[in-house]
Amino acid sequence: MPKVLCFGSVNVDDVFVVPHIVLTGETISSSEYTVHPGGKGANQSVALSKAGVETYHAGRIGKDGVWVADLMKTHGVKTDLLNVDDKKPNGRAIIQVSASDNDNAIVLLPGTNHAISIDDADSAVGAFNKGDWVVMQNEINLDAANRVLDVAAKKGMVIVLNPAPCPSDFVKSVSMTNVDVLVLNSSEAASIANQLPTTTTGDSASTSSASSSPSELAGHLLRAVPNLKLVVITLGGDGAVACIRSHSSTTSAAAASSSASTTSTSSSASFAVQSISAPALANCKLVDTTGAGDTFVGFFVASLIKTLTARCGGGGGAASSAAKLQDVLTADVVRQALTMGTTAGGMACETHGAMPSVPLWADVEKRAAQA
Image 1 (cartoon, rainbow, N blue to C red):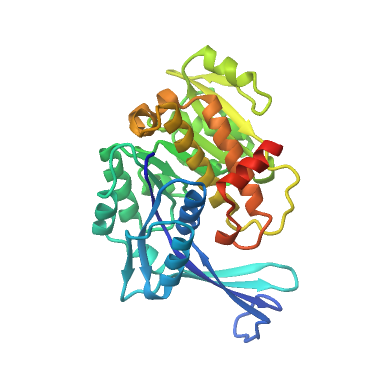
Image 2 (cartoon, rainbow, N blue to C red; image 1 turned 90 degrees about the vertical axis):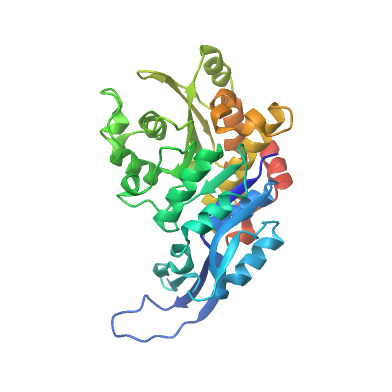
């Protein structure tokens, strides 16, 4: 089975419960203080590992963040490629939570997450081979991120990008040329759709993203970025939708016959777009949504890797090669991955915290089977 490199952020979150968000010049007392491990990269590494794929986390942490790396190890993440910086503090968030209305205010220190070097990127990607996967977010410095994307593509790795957070200049700052799989939420999808060029006069998502459906947005992104093979948009309580390039009417008919998803095709100059959706977890006992999106990413990617590997004889090969991914990426494969992702993400909402709330693969399979 292919290995996964999750190259991304590691944070320490300091949370203060206060009577109200502090005002200018005011000093108030906190009634509660907790420290949590965080960072989208770290959370997704834990989710990938708990979903049963061999996961390596790379990036940079401060000495004050070593305990987070140690915690990640207890969840099965390999941290040999995570470098410790002796001079800079770890990425950190100072979070005020208002006891009166649950409002919050956050001061973010990027710290070591923005101190990752080109050498860090080169050495990390250098430990992987063609057919392995790399998962990235947008919480590290841009030069390192773009270096990872470039080198991984040249090696023939499958590239998964979760563009969170997503600023208004994301498309100009981050090279999407080599991305194979794009996973994002609806607001991120709308932002990127507005940043990308119009592809066809009939593509409504390219001109009015605010009123476009999720499948229209995903289809627009798929057409606007030529190398993309799969776009996934998460919808919180409404589940998730994905779009792939449709190669034949047979594939479309097979997907349409399933009650677990909806399928549609729309023409473009060179291909049709096929849309598959999956509902959110039913009967979810909502406690805390922290980390639910990262859990979705981990389980969605892990499901793709497991299914594609099994379909190609249990090895890496065509199942893991970016060049062959589109040929084996069928509606049923994506549907299964969406189901595992939405089920795992929903289960993560039933427990407090990010890393501690990530379920195990076997438990997600059981919950999905009960739906």
